[in-house]
Length: 221
Image (cartoon, rainbow, N blue to C red; front, side, top):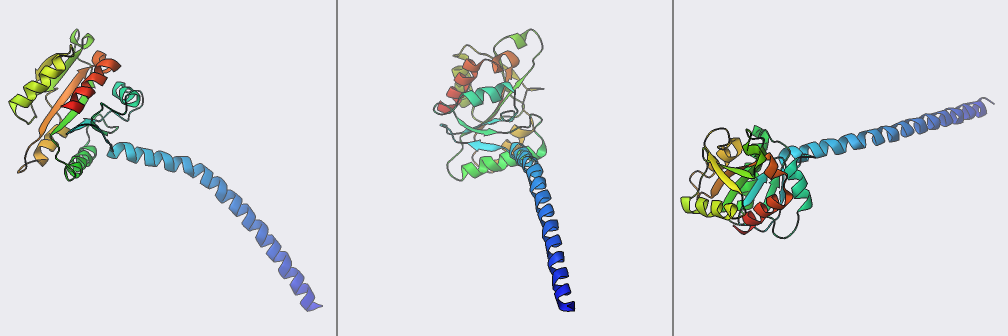
């Protein structure tokens, strides 16, 4: 009798253990459902902070550090305009040009340079300019940090002016930031591409047609 009672007790304990395991598995399943969106958000954050390369039709690369920020004027244009006539892009979600994103983009530029020569790197930005120029289709070409021959720069500016865009130059606030500085520095002792920063007025950045034409010029440059 003692042996039969032990077997019954053992079966009872196994049944209890099975029920406990079922509860634990249910809780783990619920926990997994909770963690999945968090994991996706973390991946998106990492994706945005490191930048993403988009193939395009150009001999160079256009960097748009607000290109992954939802609601940003340039993000909206890049979301609408895809396919032919668009230059190679590096999009990110860091308008402040932090050291981490700058280093990541510089590495991406040189990684693409291993496949084919990079003949230009343009940092495309927008800003709210002082009134009244912010209400116009204005583009500021940064001259504090830039590289490339005068002929290339003049040809580039002429093509943009042909679109009806007013081109200004600045060697101060809009003269070029950490990204163009580090890109230029990274090509030390190497053939230098055209490296330039272009800042659009807020009005211009919201004009889908004009921004698309700017991208077309860069794709064909």
